[in-house]
Length: 333
Ligand code: AHG
Ligand code: MN
Ligand code: MN
Image (cartoon, rainbow, N blue to C red):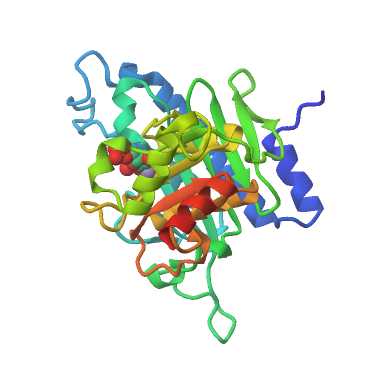
């Protein structure tokens, strides 16, 4: 079989007018940054030296946590390309506009530079999540100032979204609005190769992912759904379910894409807004899952229809195989 690299895939999309040259370059730049993060994640404790992470480097600077480092890698990779108007991140309180001497472009990039970072010390998969929006225009047709307000667009307006998983292999999952495709990093050629074209979330499933330690605080609809799964073949579902919780959304969602099932981080009596961030976790993942034939809601509303009120706002997340998501959502209604 002929190998298709991410670059070839994107050039193909550009030639069929699926994306423009700027978006192609932006996605390639993000993917390049993900390769650099993957390499750094792979070094693990070796990168910190024998004294461990609390030491300072030769310049006397405190060695940086990997979330901050990943944020810097992504920002530095993207700042000079000329295709971004601004960059927003879990690690930045406010959006970072592109300023002189760099050229400003038409896109807004939102990222979770390192998702699942609590897993890094224990050698469990982590990842990077990204979402791309267009910078809105003024009535005169000029690009708006890329401040927070420019970013506050529902997820249905994303022009591209995806994530990387730094696991046993590094996988880059992408949608530019025509399906979901995943690329595996070939460490010999340092290229992403298309290995999972046209991913579709399986409809037949018997797996759920939720942090069950919050069970006593869940709302009744979520409790009901999980109780029914746990009742197994003797319960109303008439089959046994399996439970998985990596605590890295990237790894949990990749599993859902490939094996089906449901992933939930619902609101509970302690985390009243939920735990995950709407704009750089829930929206890009919901875009991907919908593009693969699945569904994503907050229990009541389609996530991609939610009008964001602030950059770092949180949202309950229920995503995965369509029928399962519809079932939990119907329990809320
Ligand atoms: P981040 O590391 O970017 O803060 O995100 C972690 C998120 C998500 O990846 C995961 O599903 C969830 O937090 C894990 O939450 P618990 O620690 O409650 O399991
Ligand atoms: Mn995260
Ligand atoms: Mn993070």
